[in-house]
Each structure stands twice: as C-alpha cells, then as structure tokens.
Length: 449
Length: 180
Image 1 (cartoon, rainbow over the protein chains, first blue to last red):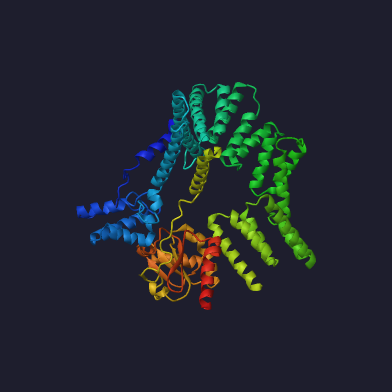
Image 2 (cartoon, rainbow over the protein chains, first blue to last red):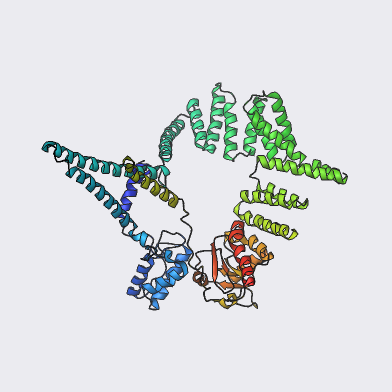
C-alpha cells in the first residue's frame, strides 16, 4: 500500500536526489572477459561510463541490448590494442556524440549544466543578502530624536519581518514545486487515482477469497452463488462467472426455487464477454435454452441474431432483429443498439459487401445500366461509403478503398485526402504501404500540372 | 515598492514554464553526431555475388543519395520498405547495408518486397553500422555530393519525414548545386 502512495514516491525521489552517487551493476556482462586482469579492469571501468543508446539510462556494462554487446566487444578489443580511456572516448564520441558518455564532459557548452545550480544558488544567496542588508540598514539608522527603547523595537521588527518573509517564500516555493511535481505525475509518480484503485482492488480480493471459500462449502446456497457470480462478472472473470451462473441455475431448478431464467441469460452474457463480444456456439446453446423457456426474451433474441450476423447470415439476423424491434417499445434500453445493427445490415446489403445471390444480381443490374445510370450508381455508392466512414472513421481499409475508387473516378485530390485518413488509422505495418501510395499519387498530380 | 514582492513569484513562474517545457521533450530523441561529417571509411562485400562491393568511395562525388540500414528480421524495416520503393520510383538513389543478417535472408527479403537499392553491402557483424553512429535498424542517412552526411533519421521512415527532411535535402541539394 505504502509503496504506491504519492507520499512514498516523493520521499523516494528526495532520497534519490541525495544518495544517487554510487553506481551499482546488477546485470554483469555475460561475454568473455579479457585474460589480463588489469586490462579487464580497465575495460570494465570504461564500460560503466558509456551509455547504452538503446536503453539510454543504463551503461553498456549493465545492458543486454545487442548494441551494448557490440560496444563491449569494441572496448575490450581497443583495450587489448593498448588504447587508453581517452582514445576510446574519442572513438565513441566521433560516432555517437558526447551523449554516449554517462557523465557529460566539461566544455563551454556544458558550463551551465555543471555550474548552473551553483550559479543560481549564488544569485539567490546574493539577493537574500542584499535585501536583508537593506532592511537592517534602514532599521540601523533611526531618526536621531527617537527614544532608546523605541529604537530597539524598530531594529527588532526590521529583522523579524525580512527573515520571516524569506522563510515563508522558501517554504512556499518548495511546497509549490512538490505540489506541481506530484500533480503533473512526472516521471511516473503514482497519482491518487492509482493508489485508490489498488485500495479497491485489494478490498475486492479479500471479499472474493471469502465468498469463494463460502461457496465451496455451501454449494446449495443460492444467494451466495448469485453474489459470487456477480462479483466475477464485475471483476472480468467471465469464465468463472459463466460456470457459477450455470451452477446457480441448476441448483435453483433442483431446489424448485423461483428465480426465473435470469441466471441462464447472465451465463450466456458472460460467455459472450469472455469471447470479446463474439457469440460462441456454447453461448448460442445457452440462449436457445432461454428462448425455449421464454420465447420473447429480448437479450436472448438479440444475441441469437448476432450469432447469425457473425456467421455471415445477415438476412436471418435481420429477420430476428426486426421481429424483436416489432415486439419492443421504442423506449426499451436495447433499442438504440438494435436500430444501429439493423441499419448497418441494411446499408451493407445495399452497398458492396452484400453476400451471395443479392450481389450477383446487383452486378448484373449495374452491367445492364446505361452509362449515365452507372455513373449515378457509382456516385451513390461512394457517397454511402463516405457517409459510413464519417460515422466510423477508424476503418482504414474503408478509407483506402475510397481512395482507390476516387483514383478511378479521376479525383486525385479526393483520393489523397482519403489516403491521409487511412494513414492515420492504419496499423504500423500497413502505414508505409499507404504512405507510398500517397507519394506516388502526389507525384502523378504534380506531373499533370 | 510593494510590487517587489512579486519578483520571486515571477521568477518561479518562468522557472516552472521552463521545467514544464523541459519535461515535455522527448527523452528518446538521440542527438546525431555524424551530421556534417564525411561518411566513414568502409568496404562491404556486395549482397548479390557478381555485383560491385559497396565502399565509401562510392559515396564521394556521386551525387545526393540515401544510405539505409536494414535487416530481414527487422519489422519496422518492413513498415518503411514501401516508402523506399516509392522514393526509388521518384528517382532517388538509395544504397543499403544489410545489417547483421545472412545474405540468403537479405536477398529473400528484397525478392519478396522489391529492391529499392543501387548498391547493397553486407554488414554481418554490425561494425560498419557502428562507424556510421547507428544505434539500431532501420536508420537512414542523406549523403551530399561531397560525400558528407547531412541528415540522419533513426527508426522507420514516414511520409512526414520524407516530405519535410529528406526530399528537400536531396532534390533541393541537387538544384542548388546545379545553380553554382
């Protein structure tokens, strides 16, 4: 608990500031050391001062990166060849710059880096001294006709105010800095939310352990089974949740208790969530059992429709969903999702991806069209694709297809815009291909001008 | 003189802004040491037998060109490969080092994805890449007419880098040399 709290991190950070002088090498080099012990010692000493460019804050002696292995070998070779530390540093700086050294060298450019803190400290000290002096001087020279005891008071208050102000300023700035640092959460300071999250998780773990033991000892306790299943569902342990809901339903039926079909529906839902939204054959069976018991159950019908859609039978999915829609009230919570799914299927069957007989028919229809009608048909297809991409822009393949259609229609500028979108949403491995197509098209456009 | 009290506050504000900007820098950005220097001496055997070896003399006085370090085992190299192909189509001269790779795999890589390179050298132990100041693959260098490195890009090429850094240097360089 303490380890994750921001307070602990700040303490660690401050401690690091004070104590981070020594270097410890946790991972020793696995490569063969030099036969000569003094040469090996020199090589090791040089390695600890050289930055591994891959891991960046490790020395090449500590790092397992390929480049670090190569550089270690080079250091050993050069030490054997009689080169000293400076020679090797020169060799490396020539290739990688000063940055390859973990300790930046003294140079005109690095003056601020080395002496900056002292410069700022002396400026600050000087400023404090001057302001302190001024206040004391004013207080030291009181009007001559003042009585003696009043003079002492003025001197005292002069000292008091300035010292107090300085202390306040220093403490305030320090506090502000720490506050700013902690609230920015950089680098990797645990934020409050993180700490809270771990608290909640730990608590959940405790409850979970207790419930699990209780359910094991009392497998007929319906309430405990239900709670345990719900808990698993909220914690994302969908496999356990599905099994427990199944057990609950059997126990409930055996006991002749009332509880209805709900555990079975939840079992199906847990299975769907376990498969990341896909209706598996197991889940389908569960929903078929639900419908057998309660033919109008909306969730079961929705998921059965989804099963058909996922198995390339959009017509059957549409059929089920339209019946469900007809049975449901407009305000039912599942209506937005249902309407979205239905409109998706209807759109797709009208555009390119409609399966089977329908699309063959469509192709024949297009072939029989007049040139003008064909143009109009293509235009309407592009418009529909464009409208779909506007609502779901993360479909990079869709943007790419749009770009190709636009090239065929001769709209190179529109194609470039579509490729730009495709580039944004494409996975890295496809990005280069899209960029290359963009570059070719761009040049084609330049040549045409 | 009341406003004097705000001077430390102003200094603090400036320092806070400076620190905030410093913290938002990308710490992975590696400063390049080779830019502005002549290409290192090297001589690498050709990837394809029968072709000319690739050595530093090929880069002196032979125009503005790219030197790209690649390997068949490197995924980002596959990502940037189509961009290299497009650059070649545009007329950019590209030479390559096949880094820590067997010649067979290197050739296989180019046969399946296309070969954008003019000269390709085998850098089997990775020493030539170290001489170029490389920290990993892929990396791309722009070399000018005099055989000096004028730009180094670490990581896969992107269209933005090509448009902003590479093409202006190569095509701009060729034009300005022609003017002289």
